[in-house]
Length: 228
Image (cartoon, rainbow, N blue to C red; front, side, top):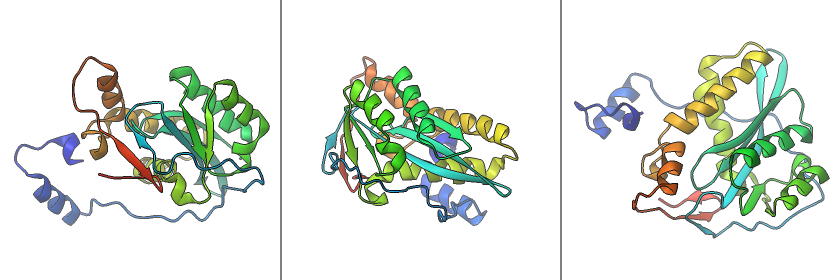
């Protein structure tokens, strides 16, 4: 928030102290709904220990649930690990693999296919149609044995749900779809990240591909946590 507002009258630490005293803080919420049914099909984890310094090197994906009243809906997100940009997503009322395929097609339509696609071992990600789509684009397949090894995608789930939907409180499936589209747009275009020089994902991506000679950061993936 500090790097978005950029107040001239407060330093960063004082800004944090003031806003935390006013109750502006993130609240941790646990995911009680199981969205991963592990498949017997498994691809090795290709990304642990990798050094990444370019977009479209690694994309990660995961599924999360959103509860509205007594009904559960599901959202699939695909994130570029390097730029932090959400490159594909889909919202649906079931956990079938077609939702994942739609998110993946969105990612391929708007971005260069990644070198590696990383996910958990959920049946949606081992579905033959999903695997074939990745192979047709020449994408290497990598899978995690635990949520900690898919941390970037898990983090996106929490961010969209806790920092956006929790405050907007969608009341219908139609509204949920509209608000997730809005959340993805705001996340990609207005949310700065320390690991990408305090820029937003879109700003960082544009600068990386531009003629700027700014220092392009490296990230090392170990249990998918960024070393900063």
